[in-house]
Image (cartoon, rainbow, N blue to C red; front, side, top):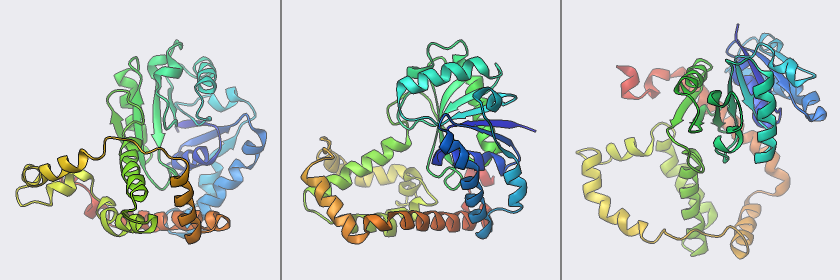
Length: 318
């Protein structure tokens, strides 16, 4: 039976524990924060119960029994074939932690980092086992949103990328390989482009925050829940993607020429956006709305699982 070590037990670490444990892996948890480590397993069980309530999991007790809290880092790493690090977004912290992970773990274990912004080259170059280290960037919460970006440093071996991809597929995630290091990887670059334009539109007074959100959730987002941008435009013109580009390339070139400058996320613009959002949702109601978000994600996940064949791409069906 495979064993995963989850190092750092905040929200992302808890999510990773669920990802592995529900697929039959033994999971060992460790965190230098004793308080976070002490409550991690209880919080994981709570999330497992929510999955069970939505028909996404059975035999919660058996899944929970596969999750073990460890008193030391070396205990957590013992026998682990995969390690997922979830420390704060700080190069020095990750560099020091990866030194320990490389020293204490089995030499053939793959070591992934949940960092959402720091390239693996900045915290693995000094390691003897640097060839097995990479970024494995999830989306929060990883047990409900399965995409995980795999981004190696220049010295990460192709074998380590392949093993990480196979592991992620085996535990039900949807791995995406980032072929060379780039700031923001893929997901945050795409998200950032959309956010930049959303901020620009608010700053220019073109639309309110609520109407921009409506444009996504009741417009583009409906298609994006089962198709990516390239498949979307491939289906939006009679002759496919080449036809679409011939028809609308000039329009998008014109739009693109107005999107060269980044918006600064501070000052009056943020005060305005914050006021708009707090008028729609008070700060006190944010936690409840996050639970609502996760419940909706569970409902969508159940729908996709029940109709798995219908949601697959043509290449997966053939």
